[in-house]
Structure formats: structure tokens, C-alpha cells
Length: 198
Image (cartoon, rainbow, N blue to C red; front, side, top):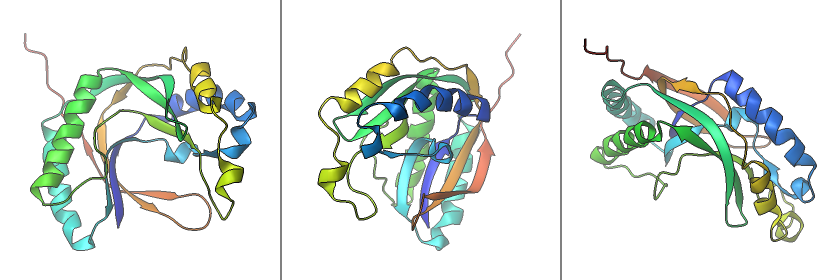
């Protein structure tokens, strides 16, 4: 199974972002990008790649432990950026320290099982678009001109979505093939909630 672990924004936050992204798709060079669909907008904490089905129960135990010791927290989708001339993304603000701690717990659990993740460091973001070849088109046709992604990222610089609660950790299965990637939840765990001491 091709697996990853994520926190997902609620539908209301996704809609706000979709409304902000829509004008970007009309900018010069936008037609040369592979835009992700809203179903692919995850805050990926760890990407595991292909994992034997027999290891999924152990992973589920590790992620249940991570959820139990990490509290729900407040986030908002905000700002934009790009990784070189390859990826356009939107960032996250709020209690990102709690999101980072959750990602660390998830990665520790994966490491204890002798598995590795593809991510070298955790940078909370939602991927909006990618440059590069896709579906048999030549790389020359798909490549973005220098500065196009930076211009799109700059257009998102002032975007600030509504605040929302990250209250659930999700183990996701992605299936590649013809057409867009398909996502299916394997299992989810609520994050911890602690009553304030009086």
C-alpha cells in the first residue's frame, strides 16, 4: 500500500483556498503546471511510500500512540511559496509548533518499526501545483518559465484563511494510475484533548 500520514483542513478552509487559487490558474504559464485537486490538499506529516499490508497494524498502533500524546491545535492556511521552479505551495500559520511535534511523533513511530519516510525535513504546506512532465508530454512543453512560480507564490503572499482546528491524525492510502491520484482513508485517530487546570 502506498501510504502517508496527514492532517487535513476542513472543507470550509479548502473552499477558501480554492477561491484564492482560482485566479492563479489564469496567469501566464499556469497551463504548463500540473495542478493538484482539492482532494489532494493534505498537510503531509510523513510519506512512507509502498508498505507491506502486513505492517499496517503495527503502523496503526504507532500512530494511535502519537495521537494520544499530541493535542488538537489551531491552524490557518496562509501565504505562498515555491520549491525552486518545481513546486508551488501554500503555507500554514498558527500553532505550527504543535503540528511539528505531531510530525516528529509520527516519524519516531515509523522509525521504531524500521521503516523510513521520503521526507528529509518537515515543512508544513499544501502542494498546489508541480512543474515537469506528465502523461507523456515532453518536459520542454511542461517546464515553467523562470519566475512564473515565484509570481504565483507572490500572489498568495497576503492570503490568510480562517482559523480551524487540527483535531485528527489520518493514515491515507494513495493510488496512482490514469487520471488523478485517488486517496482513501485507512484509519483516523482523534488528537488528545486536555482540560485546563483550575
